[in-house]
Image: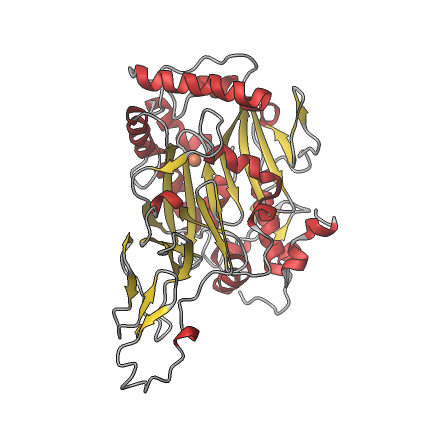
Length: 457
Ligand code: FES
Ligand SMILES: [Fe+2]
């Protein structure tokens, strides 16, 4: 289906007055190409974690939209993110996943770049170029803005995008639930092991909407719940803790971020018994007590899956991971998943978590495999000429999001749905597509930063 010039995405494809969304936005090549420009070239994207590049010369190859980027630490220890494409003829300057180097030497004709991005060497500079090319003009292309926040590295290609913390807005407290230590102290997380990377045959928005907080798909994970892969040996997480908690969805319409969260019961909660490991049991019991002592009532709040617009998924706890849904064409997504632990945790705890993370998430993880089956087949069954004529339903819980939500004296920002009552809501999913349509329609960040003039939805 051809897209008419000046077609508005809001209403035509994302009709939130009816709670209906066109399948075209998942399968249409033209829409996908516009998405790369309008969404991925203008948003803040997750690049990696500082603990991956601790020493000068360390680098890690990451991605922004479809493009490969180099995250590296220069000789002065400053972190940079560069487009991984040689300025001479576009060759990938670095073809390894990670490592340490004094310079990046292009394998094609040998231009070499220092770790601060400057063009350091050109073969036959004197003879073939007669010393005339201006090397200062041909350094690696660098992102427009970069921000390191509690160890995580974020970047955008758009100079006019608001600074990262303004982009986050009140969602910051929920990102903190992933990046702070479990005992409630600031920061202190690190990446454990490598980054898992794999391809799945579906549009990137299928996993994105699922991790925004699809609280409706428990049926998909029934077998995992029965097997009991959770850290305490029951369910797929710690079910006792979850069952006692108040379940919430929190969304930020003007920013496009959203998350689930659990508010644990007042007073001391019973820490789960961690499968015959006294060290692990004691560590988590200690963290629970400490977090409540440090944060008071807010220490009862723990995270569940959520997302920073457009494609960074947070899974703050059990397992604690960050995933990026890299678009790889309209029909394909490359998933990258990082795993986090408290840097200060004993090795036995880190190892215990590493084993749990692997059996839960990633291409070999039982829970993630359940999810991928759904996304892959939903995508292929939506591509056909007939199938794509019919919109999807996103009507669940429409109009039940509440502003100024307060419980036990805790005032929540954003719009909240209490899932302890409603069981499930597609509020966060609608929020993703509301913001997506904003990006597809808006010409500039003047329009997108609508909170600055108070005209946000
Ligand atoms: S493409 Fe890199 S030196 Fe020619
Ligand atoms: Fe799932």
